Length: 196
Image (cartoon, rainbow, N blue to C red; front, side, top):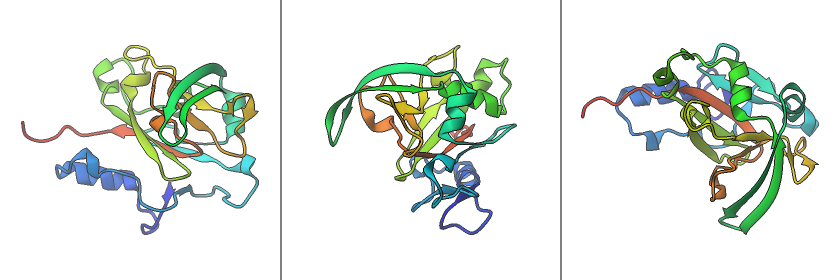
């Protein structure tokens, strides 16, 4: 559940669904402004204890730490090069589980046997600085893009427990989707627009 400047119990995902049902363009959808955190996540506690929430249309929402990502799923290694708008070319190595493996454990509420059903799902990933990005399930699905997108637990051999996990998209030449200090991942569908 997200905390924000909204009234208690208000979820931006539900608001987004209501907005979409009225035909509002996707460009109007974004997490609430200001700081976001996971309810029950210590913001002043030790960094290793901080959790991020995987929520949305899931059978088993998850609250995870970097340590959970490191111990519960196989770790992949990805050397990457991407262009950063503020710091130029970046060369790093990242280790962490595949995003797909972690989300599979949360049980997305689609019919896994139907490819078209899976292709309707979107993912939003939000970082500690409020930066967020959208991915499609098809990008990470083995029957579609099969992209080896990671939830990094280490960068250049250094654990990310204090900083928080990072989204790593090895195929991207631009670093805009490398979301740092992830605070939440939302999984769900986008209704089809009305009209032509």
